[in-house]
Image 1 (spheres, rainbow, N blue to C red):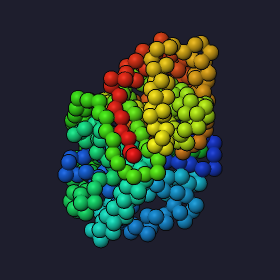
Image 2: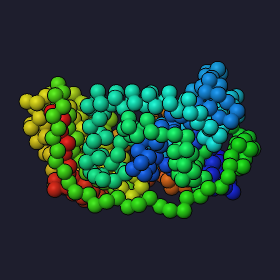
Image 3: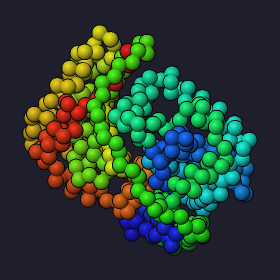
Image 4: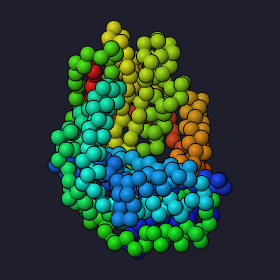
Length: 406
C-alpha cells in the first residue's frame, strides 16, 4: 500500500503514507487562509491559529500544550494566504494521542476571552518584529504591490488595531464561514496499519457536522506592473523584482518551478547566486521564489546589497532574466537542471515531516498525490522550448514590478 485514502460522509478526506519508523507525523490542513478574510477580518485566520491552542471543551491551554510534550512529541501550526495547518510529530505508540489532540483543538476550541486578550499582545509583538526585519517585511509589501486592493495582497498577520478588536464571535464566524469539511484533509505518515487508520479517523472525524463549501474564491483583480522605492534608512538596500505567475492549476506550473530553481533556487550554483555573489561579490542574500495559488501565483527575486552596488545588481538580475528569455538551454544545461530538481525533491521527501505536509497539500488541492517516479516523468517531459516560452511569459520586462527599500 503506497497510500491509504478515504473520504468520509461529511467530506473530510483522509490520506496516510505507511513508513517504517519509530516516529509518526500527522496534520490537519484546512483550505482557508488570509485570502479568505473580509477587510474587517484582516489577520483573523492567523489569529485563530494562535488562539486555537488556548482551550477546548475538555482541555485547558496547559493540558493542550503538555499533551504531546509530556511524551517527547511536538505540536505546531502555521497559516498561509490560502491554508491553515495544525501538525504534530510523536513516537508511533502515541499516534492516537496525537490524532485526538489535533481533532479536539480543531473542532472543539472554545476561545476563552481571557486567553484571546493575552494572545493579542503576542501577535502585536510578532507584527512589530516584522517591522524590524526589512528582509522579511519587503515580501509582504511586494505582494501588496502586485495584488493591489485585493485580499491576496494583505499581509497574513493583520494590523494591531484590527487584532485588538477581535472577539470570540468574530473567530467563530470566520470558522463557520471558511472551515468547510470538504476542504479539510487529515494526513499522516508512520508505521500504522490501514485498519487502525480507518478505525481512528472514523472515530475522531466522521461525526464532525457537514459544512461544505458552496462558493469559489473570487478572481484576482487585473495586475498592473508597479515600481516603488521606500526610504527605510537601512544599512543595505533590499530589492524584490517579480510579477504574478501561474496558478497551481496551470499546466506550466512545474516548468516554472524548474526555471525558478535554475535561476535562484536553494542550490549554490543558481544563476543569480553565481553572477551576483560568486563572480561579483556584491550580494550576500540572493534568491528567487515561485508560489502557486488558487487562480494565480507569485514569482519574485529578492536581493540585499549596498547602495553603491544597487544599480549594478539590478542590471545583472535583468541580464540573467533576458538570457533565459532569449537563449534556450542547451541539452547539457537542461539535463543538469532536471537532475538537480529531482535530487532536491528526493531529499525533501526523505524528511518525513516535509513528506507529510507535501502529501497533505497535494491531496487537499488535487485530490491525489504523485509518486516521485510520476513527478520525475513529468519533469523529464519539460523541454528547453517550454522553458524559454515560460521565461518570455513570466519574465517579460514590461510585466515586472520592483520594490526597493533604501
